Length: 356
Image (cartoon, rainbow, N blue to C red; front, side, top):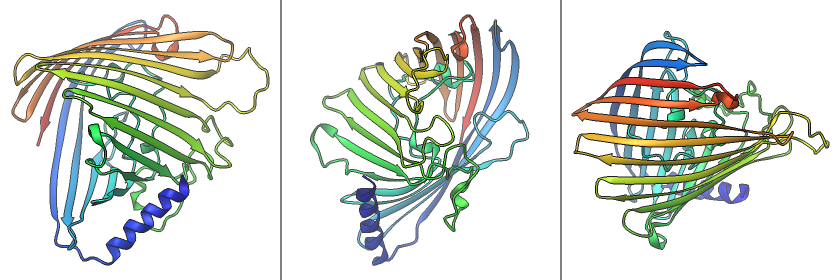
């Protein structure tokens, strides 16, 4: 796998060396979002007011042979930042070259191929992506690491089948803003051992009108991936969505297997061993501007002592768009937050988003 990816990169890099590039185009877009968050229940009770924002810079151009290149970078304080004075980070950066034979690119904190949330039809966000419950264990994904990718041409296979592959040469290379590592230095502050690699695969298809299906798989590799934490693991997901008229539905299943080292025969530990995720949702577009949705997520942790805890989140959401402004109202219920039995929270969010 590693040799295949290296060969593809060398091939496309060689092509680009012998072509000249025309002047490209530069674009800037972004959004600002204000939220009022109300939490009640047994955990995380309170009210909060906040504003988050992001700026997206894009550039693109065409080579003399017709191949196209693109670059994008995002500046934001981070969705999970707890400091109101957080500085913007150079985040979600990618540089790609598109040819008739496929697209190759370098991705920094970007390009995740995991399909755990691909079935979501929520008009605002997944219930577990809006602040609560805390400690949700999502799938591994390649955008946690600096990586290279190859994407098949969209029209190569029937039924809209498109495959993508990504490879991270060193999972310790995860420093925020590390697109500035122009000397190729490896960041050593990660809890993952130097030497661990990661590979992620994705396949999507659209066999009939309105139907989309897909699957993804992620695994760690290398000689030292297990040296510092539970990193030498794997995860996978599959999904299906269907849209007809104003109605769309989605369903997905996912799993995450943690690396636990050699089997010691210990069955008394309450450490997590395996996560099983299920998601289904439905959305209805009442008008061109007004949409409503319902989504339910469950995540079950399986522990070494053979006990399980199921975390459940469900959410009703309404969104209304007026040009570049979107108003949203979200009400969610979370049971067993963070896989703690009885840790329940109700959550209401009022949000205003401005896009420009």
